[in-house]
Image 1 (cartoon, helix red, strand yellow):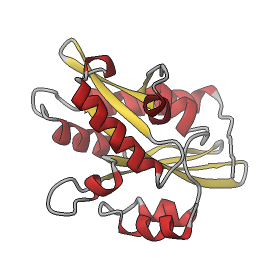
Image 2: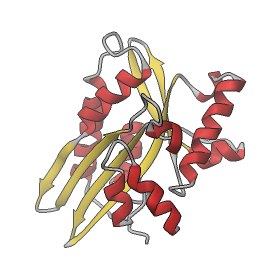
Image 3: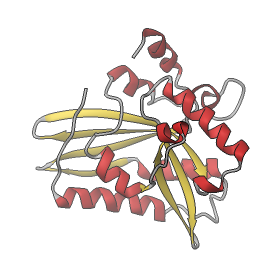
Length: 204
């Protein structure tokens, strides 16, 4: 099911500010390694950056289990999920995305690292049509997370990265990206993602 919402400028700017503040609040010096950085960023992205007469926007983040035997990341290929619950003009919709995160830029990945990323994306594609990749490049003494199309990476096609705040405004706020199935949204609210296997067996 396709849903697309149009929001006025002040709401789009509230979302952009929320995401940029989340990024600025995570110190690369204190969260140097990828798992720690991603977990800290996800925690800051959570919240309700806008609620008013023009609608409601709430973001929920799930840091997917990556440690231990049978860890969810190994099975599903994802590092995290983002769920957006958006209400506008009496219509409420929740959509969720799955994504894999990598420090650096795509062009700097070694052949082995890129092949591993492709395999992780393919795993995600068993559960969602349009998985994402978040590349976190260095930007001076800060980091700049950017979103890329996982499908285009798998296909070997060029993919233009979007700043994380731009992606939230253009694709998540509008709910153009993501899966609306209620059972999928519920499944990605749990770090172990166990219910995704059940959904996959039933078929999308």
